[in-house]
Length: 195
Image (cartoon, rainbow, N blue to C red; front, side, top):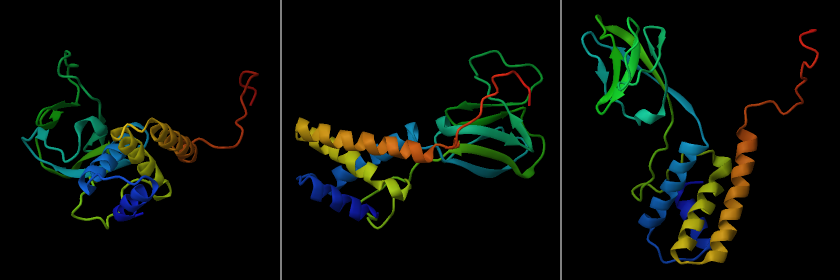
């Protein structure tokens, strides 16, 4: 569904007097929460490694970083509040970005690969034809999550419970279909390695 269709669906299911700006803000909150807690879409960005540059600014939240590879070598994370591991390569984060230790001594084209959890594009009133980043089969999660917040604004507890129940049911269904584990029975080796 396009953002305009999500907004229409919300208005049809629960007529309200909130502005589109308010509704879109709530949709963004639900979308952000889903990406932070449920949806994990690994994404990798490749950067040129530059000699003498040890901190790289990031266009995504540092909390979403999953893996850092420098010149083909995976680096471990080092918390700067702890004692550094001697003689080791590592990455760290500060308020300006991602840091690499030791500082690169030469330029390496595409020498830095950062894998991170994707964050959703923030929806705005300026483009209601955009389709949210969330799985299109489950856009109703955005609808029901937003409806629960709108009903809460109106202190309509019965509808909050109704929309929350539908949201939770659909969230359970989403988790089932997005679970990467096989749906066939797994045979457990209880005899201790006979095979």
